[in-house]
Length: 477
Ligand code: NAD
Image 1 (cartoon, rainbow, N blue to C red):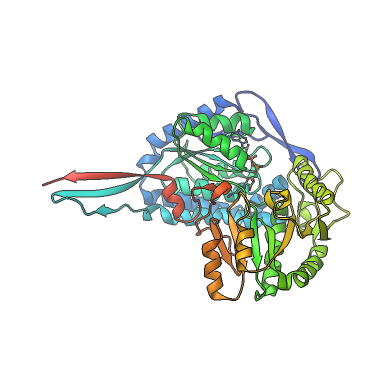
Image 2 (image 1 turned 90 degrees about the vertical axis):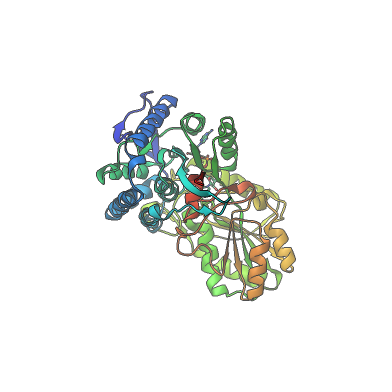
């Protein structure tokens, strides 16, 4: 049984109710989390405020940095344990779960070093005046986190918020959150003051909504679907609470005829199979120069057929999807493809060891998908890659920008001038040229445009979002 973490104490929810956690690899319940409600959120917000005023606000920036660094080291000591928790909770193959645990430690390392490097400015003004700006923390920040990368998203959002001097109330996803409850314990062990990191579990429409509405929350970082992002920002707007929205994507991989295909192919495959396609920045649309469309699809098809899907512990190319409704969602998209006579190039295989009760889906490559079809427009959030060809650069740009989303784009070309033109013309938050998110990108600002959201997390840029600017004008004669 898992408990909430409020003011450094493990607490049951006031409702006394719990939610069963299912293992996506076999669909069976294996643990329970608290089904909290608005009163638990209220308790957490009060604890956070008290922690802020009593201790956190008074710590120097370097001291905050040392605490974050201690947590980073502690997470590193517990990487195996956190890997095992995330693997089972999310159904991630071992290597992917481990990469997330390592990334979590890296986020806290990065933000530990950033705490005392967040500077204001002095501004030339009237004679006899001195003007300066301070970057002040919002105060109590709320963090609503999805199930696909609990540790990574906690690292980038809570790490950045703490570094900027805020205290946090976290609402993780009801489908996967056990790693975060463990990290909260580790934070207590390394000496985080009570009220700095509070975690309240439960359903989105109950606890997430209560968090977004709570007048004691000074800023909300929401990562999740566009639909819920709309709800959260509407609720927050009623009290003019600032919100950062990290939403979905339908990101293109754009391959020109002069691309290095040996480099592109593994990145294209990884971009859609990582975490079984349940990644906001998944490269889920493949736009290919018509001159190499057939040979590239043939090579990719060959690679897709080799992909294997199975229980997380087998550490294959893909694990299961998170839950049955997600599996059904992917099936619905594939059945729409069938009805529309969209051709399948190739599919990977679910291994025989995969229990029938698990939520498996073979990775699938579809071709000649019309740009207006929902498979080319909507986020599937599963291992489905849709391919289409383009005539020239203008056509590639037109297709790339032809969805409601704008999160990430991959561009594969050897032509340096074209690399810059494409980077300028594709509407999105980040463009990767001849790579697709290599290296994890803890240091790189991340976020979207259009329905992919607004605001930036990761990197130093996140610290600006987690602070508010105060201008101080002094007349001294
Ligand atoms: P979701 O929107 O259903 O849930 C996200 C979180 O919001 C969960 O914690 C959920 O409990 C909570 N929630 C649900 N209803 C709520 C409400 N009414 N008020 C407040 N909170 C509520 O999304 P999901 O299915 O968990 O995650 C998948 C989505 O997240 C995809 O669209 C994906 O692209 C997106 N995502 C984006 C990023 C990014 O950085 N841009 C990263 C990861 C995931």
